Image 1: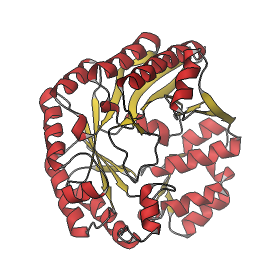
Image 2 (image 1 turned 180 degrees about the vertical axis):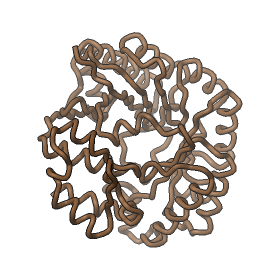
Image 3 (image 1 turned 45 degrees about the horizontal axis):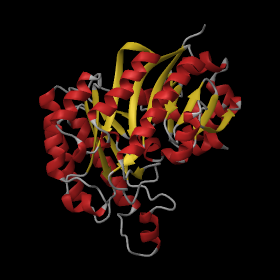
Length: 381
């Protein structure tokens, strides 16, 4: 039996309020029974997959959402206990949980640590109360600082702060001040994302109606470049387009995605990628729960990726990392060198100054990182 090394993603769709820019599957849970039914379905899905794919060996666990800490500490512990019971797992496994700062306290911190969670990702987004209110967050700056210091006091030594830029009404000076406050906390990891106006979200409707003003692309790009320079000075490695880490603190789970390796997604709307097969769960919560009640996996769609598409995705995902694509890894996986499969694309990107190469890797230049979406389009033709 060939072992499948994989990451495990567990989707917790519950929130206390829906952010107007968010297009992830999430909902405001109005009663505890819905949560309990969902947890029971999750546990059953874990058990079924442990039998269906017995060769899977879990390298990392990531609880995302939604807001996973909208659940109680005990409920989160039960999910992880079920994983330990049914899956084979790496003894040095990285277990990350996302948390809104307003849903984190001493008791929850203790239970999470005892359950094996060893990496905390706080959705701070900004240190400006005015901006946090504008983007519909339920927390404020005080909540961020309290939750961060609680986590430190209770023993978390691997904390990520999720930050955003290009927010409505945000100036470059405001963002630079936010960076300084992040630097003072000095978390092990920082994820930095530009506000994206997604289709059919409240923010898209406000923008179309002229009721939402966001910084220009040039202003947002300047914020991004300032962040790279500032965080490099603070000792952070810019190891992926949107991610920065202190030495030895890269997110292991996300690196599985960026290297296009296997992951199993559990929960409503989650996606899995095992070998070259991708499959997605139903987003309808009731349908997800009901199917698992009858021991039926809630898979809505599945596809086997054509070889060329798998190759293209591998190129794009690996090039998101600043170290780029390892030529040897591509050759080992596909039995062909990348320069044979994508000769014209690589040549054009080099001519445009977006891509460079060393003896061992292909990687985006500084200009290429700034124009990464244009670079990636080359591989989608």
